[in-house]
Image 1 (cartoon, one colour):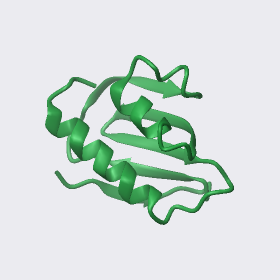
Image 2: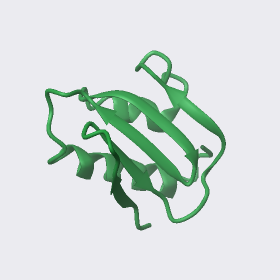
Image 3: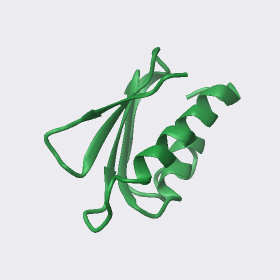
Image 4: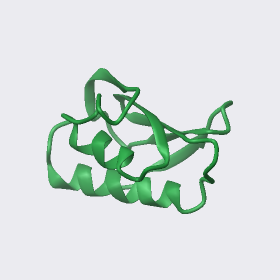
Amino acid sequence: MQVRIQETPNPNALKFILPAKRFLDPLSFPSAESAAHNPLASRIFATGRVYNVFMVQDFITVNKLPDFQWEGLQEEIVALIDEFVNSGIPG
């Protein structure tokens, strides 16, 4: 699967675009606790560098904590997305 990464006006947010629609309803997770029931969002929060995850149709927007850089983190998030989509677990 090819995930494209798009910058946003917020330097602490990146949009990870999936090749197809994956989420039927918008999902917003403002904390790790709120993401506990969602396998992908909880794994993204488990990186310890994220404070918000938003999933809608064919993209995921991730907000990182300002003290961290995207270098390394964006590759980790893409790997988590690939693993999740390839697992067949519904969004």
